[in-house]
Length: 181
Image 1 (cartoon, helix red, strand yellow):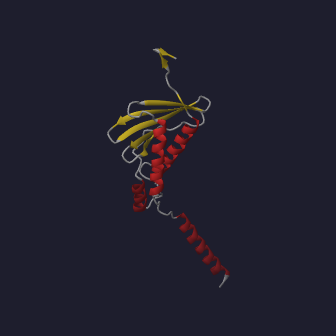
Image 2: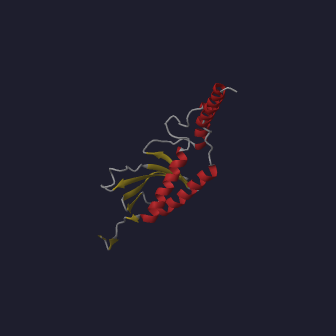
Image 3: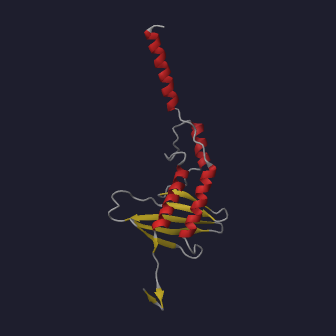
């Protein structure tokens, strides 16, 4: 084999390897992990939302700001809650916390993020993966989010709620003998 043929063979093999490495594998939904995240988020929210059936607003002071939870909608089997954070003035320049809309499914005891910063509904995990396979594009859906966007949002919610449970302090009104203290 001449050096030129040998070089051409090597270049062809390298091109094939590069092409194969650029081809993305289809996103696979890890449904048990997704449901575990939603189950854990429901339990965390139940701790943060005492008296959910009668109250509509909660506020927790955090080390670098505050977290507000507001009931948006109630029905027999679901409750939709908005979680919004406000950062302290020295933190605002660094990161603006997103506003999450979460739906609690009381019969299934699950909580799921349905919108982030008012953009929703988030794509279904299985539907996003099927869309990616069918269209053969780079894993982006019509809203330019990843196929696992919903799972990422629910994991973020879990981390956020865990941080709030560990570090948050509730704000409440103390009324004694008709006097607001």
